[in-house]
Image (cartoon, rainbow, N blue to C red):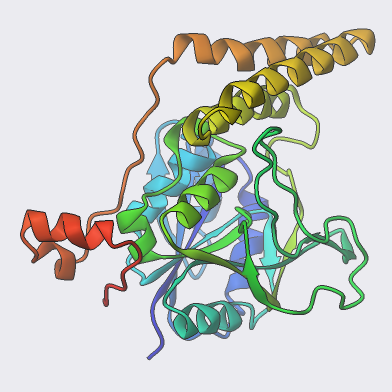
Length: 326
């Protein structure tokens, strides 16, 4: 039997979208998977639709909206698989999408996370993701390879990449036990870039798997240009630098991002988009009220690591990537 894969997806008042994903997953050919749906404080009627879906997924209910990071972390704590796949609820999958991802991970024990090729659901010939670049240390931004391109096979070669994509990210459980889960302070946006940076600094590799395809409807929950998105992208770009900046570049990068935020504020004001102006201010003000950041939470170690005495466990983690069998 191949390793168990736990698929974790979030729902927030989008039951119809989530059920479309569940229908898509019901056609998956991978023989050993579980589906965990975390409801992020939706209305009761919305939760009821998912609870009534057949075959019923494992439904974890949160009383409040924990965001993308908190909701996924809650789901991962309930996951039982050797691998955990974070999958946006606004995606649909090919029936055989999971096999190539698992094959890539099983073939190289140093791969900590992998993402498939992601194409736009409503523009199916166009690529959203075919790998990710390293983060620019001054701008605090990464770029998705192939983004916006028509898929003519130019990104059909799988291989190591700098960043996986949070819409479809398969993670080895050992990574969640040693590197940790998603950064809780992000709530939404930038968490995948932060996670990818931590993953690679800990000695793991990220992989792009061209043989697997996921279709993304994109921004169904928050919208493509909402004030919510402006607020969290503003604050989380700085948050990423606070968490991951190294040496003398960090204050320069933060100054650059603050200047960019000022430019965005002026543009929004000239366009009369005052809700976005307020969103930028809210994003920056968050840092004044949060001088200390939340430590990353790790999944509880498997018995193989628990059995070690504490000094030995620390030495095992210090050696970097390890493979812990189920």
